[in-house]
Image 1: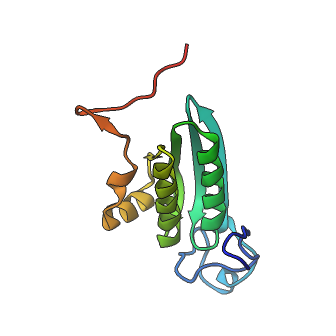
Image 2: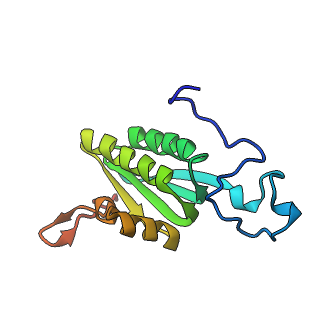
Length: 152
């Protein structure tokens, strides 16, 4: 597999570091098929000169490449950058953070920005512990956040 290949998580596999959410302990908690805890969905839509990507579910080493591809496409399709809504993310690990940091580096190289909108408690904790939350805030000019011009 090449680093550029995008794949979905293998059926029945999960990270040993990802907690079982909504699964009772016991025999059914083993490597049966993916349950509700392994759901990962994205949606995107334009908003002015920016693209908004909504991430829902768990982002770890299995799903981070998919999120990275979705965010990369959104960045290429936007004029000013990407807003990432992470309010529905239940699990967020270093693979997810690295994907977001790579996206930010690419955005800056093209004069664009990446803003995290309403991070979930899980995401906020990782961003705070790593000191990276400030990297994903809206730009500030003269003490006021920059807001995109409204369209008539």
